[in-house]
Structures are given as structure tokens and as C-alpha cells.
Image (cartoon, rainbow over all chains, first blue to last red; front, side, top):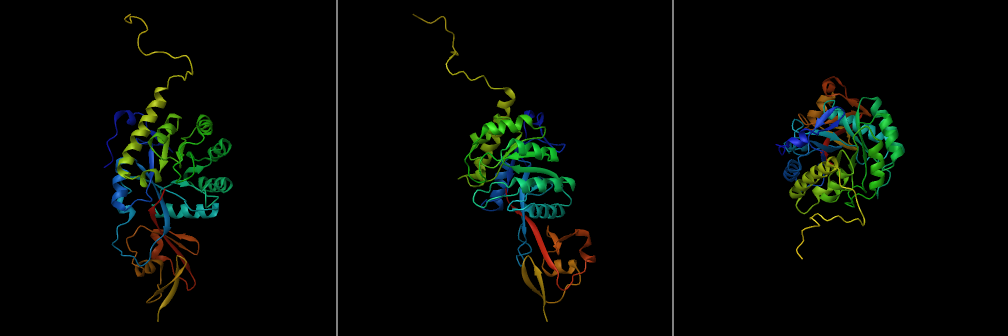
Length: 269
Length: 69
């Protein structure tokens, strides 16, 4: 079972393609030691949406070997199949159509089209092409992209249900490198904007949420932590704290006009 | 006599030629597994495995969901 959601998160759901989710943390399922650690960490994260990749099945493997879908039953989690590893719109569309068939017509999907094997930077031209074809085919597309506000706007105009700019390179753990661009994307978007990629530790997730992101998607920051289950919990708390701080509205920054928190009168002399 | 068929980019040798995609799934011990199948680049819907005939030069892709981010 997922960690019980507190009333504050129930009253402020993340809505993607019309569906409400209590958790604003979305997690990947890769790079864990084994399925048991995968499950334990994901349950600790409180995530309801989990990403999966689509790969050629191992032929000749034990027919009774457990699968990811046994570990994380689709009845318990919302699957977000991705097109990770695809470098062309054709390959991405083909992969996501297979994913839809595999998941019995499930339309929610994470589009990612890469442009470079070293940096895993997205190829936005191919991403735009694939997004058009997928949206026309009835997919609900959550799209991984660069932090370019113009491209983000075009992806939204195509009909993507969520825009997911990188905070820094996939798997880098470098954190939020360009908060200004993320702010521009968030302020113009009418669909949820989620940071996808680059979060390294809990404070990065909190910063993303304080900027006004609707959610954060991460994998490596949890899976490659020394203690993934504990980091998963930290990320859950950071996303919730960051969201609350965003909604609460931070105090204005004042460089010099220091304002003491204690009374200035009544001091002993 | 064995039958050679291209699955996931490699040649698989089966004891006999599968008449349908359903036979192929059974021959590869994938019955009941969560998979999706492409035959010559076209998806074969789950409900049509037993009515989709396997041709001599067909190429298949069989995929599953795995961990990923």
C-alpha cells in the first residue's frame, strides 16, 4: 500500500489529463538492486505514477520468473510507459504504441526522444513530430523536453497533457540549473509542468516545487542513493514541503533591510 | 526438422512451424506473460493471436515492460 496521503495533499491534487493524483512525485523503476528494493522504495516515495521502459523480452527465460508488473501491479499504480532510448520520432511512436498494446489501451505516456548519447539531451524537432502523431492517435502525452519556453509552448499547443523540462541532464543529479527558464515555462503553461531529470537530492525537489512545478519525476536520485528507501521518503517529504511553501508564498527577499524577529523595545539596560 | 523464425532481431529455432502467432507465443513459453507483439512492423492485437497466420519470412518483435525512468 502507498503511504497514506494527508488531507492537505488530498485537497490539492495533481490533475493530469483530467485524472487527480494525491502524490506530486512520479518515480522511475530502473536501476534498483532488485524488484524487492524497487517496490520498497516506490511505496516509501508515495508515488502513484511510475514510469516503465519497453524492451525486447528475454526469450528462453524462466516462464515463472517475476516481472516488474508482478512487483508493481497496474491495479495499484498508474503506469507511465516511456520511449527512453529512442532517437527518432518513428522509434518513439512505435515504442509507445507497443506500450499501449501491452497495457491494454492505456493512453497516458511519457514521450522522450533523445538527441545525444552522451548527454541524453532531448531532440526537440523529433519530439515535436512524435508529439503531433501521438496526440492525433489519442495518446495522453507527458513530454520530456529541454527548458526552452518556446518549445514548451509549442508542445502544449500540440496538445500534450504535461510539459516536463529537464532541470539538468538525465541521471546527472546536478539539480535545478536554470530556475529562471523553469519559471518562464511554468508561468505561461496551462497544463502541469513537471521537472523531469536532474534532481539529485531532496532540496532539489523542494526547489522545483517552490518554483511552482506541479510535480517532479525522478529515478536515479532515489535508486542510486546509498539508502534508496530512505531517499524515497526524503523525496516525498521534500515534494510536499516544496508544494506547501509554494502555496504559502514565501516572504520577500530583502538584502539589507534587516528586520529583527524579536521586539526592539524593552531591552534591559 | 526445425523451423527458423526471426524474433527480436535474432533467429530462433522452433521444433515446428507455428501456424499462428498464438502458436508462436506458446512455443516461446510466453503464455500469460504481459507482452506486446509486432509482426513485420505492425502490432498484432492481443485478441488476434490465434487468427494471425505466421508466414515463412515474418519478423517479430516481442516486448515487455521493464524498469526505467
